[in-house]
Amino acid sequence: GPVGPRLLLPYDLHTSETEICLLDKHGKVVARDRIASTETELCRYFQGAQKLEIAMEVGRISFWVSKLLPLLGHGVVIANPRATRLIAENRRKSDRFDAEALARLLRVDPVLLHPVQHRDEVSQDIRMLLGMRDLAVKQRTAQTNCLRGHLATIGVNLSGSRGARLIEDAYKAAERIG
Image 1 (cartoon, rainbow, N blue to C red):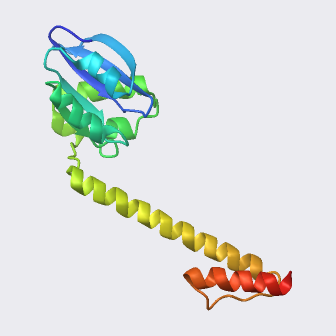
Image 2 (image 1 turned 60 degrees about the horizontal axis):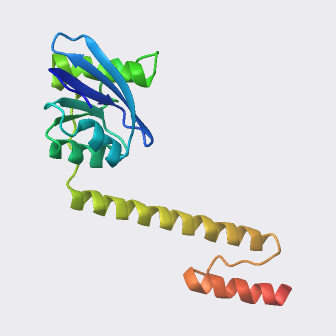
């Protein structure tokens, strides 16, 4: 893991790997690393390191990582990449470039990262459950429309049937036909 008077900034926590760019207090790149984005690897890398300021882009795993790093003694800034023009409008998109861009922006002024705060755990859980429910409703609607469409091709109209009754009516129609 990192040691010495450095400023550490991981970039864009991908589900599998995290790109890291370390700057010293003068803005010189002193190290680059790529580590697995697992709790074990992040703890191995950051545990025992001197207190670091860490910038990361908001993303799928930034919620749990942003909770873990302060427990290991580090500061965390969660950047909004869409609001950070240097990253959002860059034509040379790469993890390596973005990691360094985050590092430099954090070094100059964290406000340039347009920091965001994650919701609390209860709100995150509720949001996840609502998202899962929304997906289930969309899938059920798609399956219902598909079933109605297939049955319509053989002359069966179940437009008035809903839910469990739709399935019963579909079975009855299949028995009549088949």
